[in-house]
Amino acid sequence: MEYWLISSLAAFAPIIAIIGAFITPLLFTVTKSKKLVFTLSELVLTTNAIIAVLVAYYVYTNNAVLYYIFAGFPPPLGEAYEIDAIGAYMGLLIGLVFPFVNIFSYRYLEEHGGYEWYYTLYLGLEAGLLGIAYTGDMFNLFVMLEVASIASYALTAFKRKLGYPLDAAIKYAIVGSVASTMYFIAVVLAYSGFGTLSMADLAAQLMGSPTGFDITYGYTSSIVGAATLFLGLAVWAFLIESALVPHHFWLPDAYSAAPATVAATLAAVAEGVGVYVVLRYMYTIVGLNYSLWLQWILLVLGSLGVIVGGLLMVLQNELKRIIAYSTIMDVGFMFIGVGIGTPLAIEATLFYVMSHAIVKPLLFLVAGAIEHTYGTTRLDTLTGQLRATPVLAAGLIIGGLAVAGVPPTNLFVAKLSLIMSVLDTGYYPLLAIIALGSALGLVGFLRALYSTYFEIKEPVPRKQTPLSFSTLIIVLVVLVIATGLLYNYISNNLLQPAIHSLIDPASRTQYVKVAEEYLKLLSG
Image (cartoon, rainbow, N blue to C red):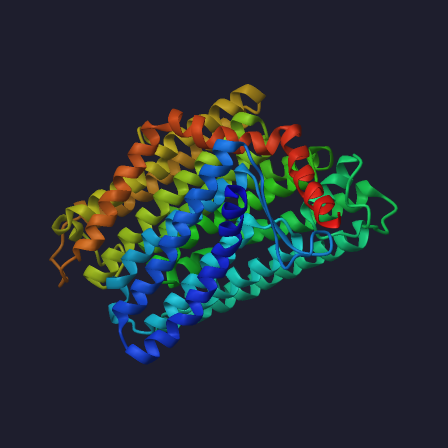
């Protein structure tokens, strides 16, 4: 009974967000109340956060793989959600980030209007990302990717009256459409080659083990060729979505044009979801036997991401763009870990994803608070102004030090784990890449801090910084440091089970067997 309840809750979490998205504009039409639509959105997001916690707790404590079949049609004929430890881990991050960042939006949006559409799109974004984390069906992942992508494009253009957000959203939409199309082609190739859209069924076929999915039949004459082509296209699509160099050019414009709350959320979890999908396909579905070639490509592209993102970051004169380019650099660090591929490197990557989900909201919310208080985020206008708002200065300092990898911040620990994995594998040139990226991160944020705090000019008119802004920034500052100090606890209780679900062959077998047992049960 408990298993069925938790599985059902996980399956309905994206649906709850979609229902909330549809109700929001209707509620605003009737009440004209910003407070009510905000309260509804926060209630829905908090409900999904509780569900994500329950799902993660059950999966972790019972070493379970949750499975839920929609409409009574089991795979490979129907669609299912299948959640192991790595999926529960990603769902937990998504579930916790959304309601936290959403609190910031209440005061931040007061000058923009269009509240009902903002919250509608924001709930749609969460529905899409949660669906990607929880699904066990390759085509459903495409559908959820489209839901999240469309919401992202519209949210990027939310301040369209300024002009440039609309241009940024169009560029984002064009690039995102290419990625979505590429992934769709990969799914079509998988279906024609292997006769299935079920992740577990495809994993079973590529494992070469007897499978309960006896009704599926593909037309490929070369399993190796079909698996390689499918994996290459699917991963390529999510490298674009993650803005890994050379697919990064859309991100700075999009994140600097979007509302700070949207940039904070996308930077926190959208890139992490891209990393998660790459790991899922490489390890659980296709398997390392067919994906070792991809690790070298990810090492090269990840290294380029660190260098290019860091170099471009130090050349910017606008705070949001500095943070956006630091995101590109951090994505490079994540994919270096994926490319190394050892258990320690995967652990460093997963902790980097978690740390990124704290540091980037901190920095983007600081930028949003500065924008709300001073009306700009340009460094040449903000000269010395943060002396009057020490909480914002502290948030910028701690976030910048984290990006640079200064102890005791969480990104320092993530980079240290990455360095240890490099030393274990003997890929010593990567040490220079990591050191260069950290140095560029430090230079970039020292420039921002010097301009906004130490360079003295005449004060500019400013508003009072809302208490909610300062409170959220203080909480994030504490989390940046606390998660670094509590790394061993986080590793033992969150990271290790997720890593085990990825790299242990027994976990991959369990992922397949759970789906097979449900098929046998429903077929009598």
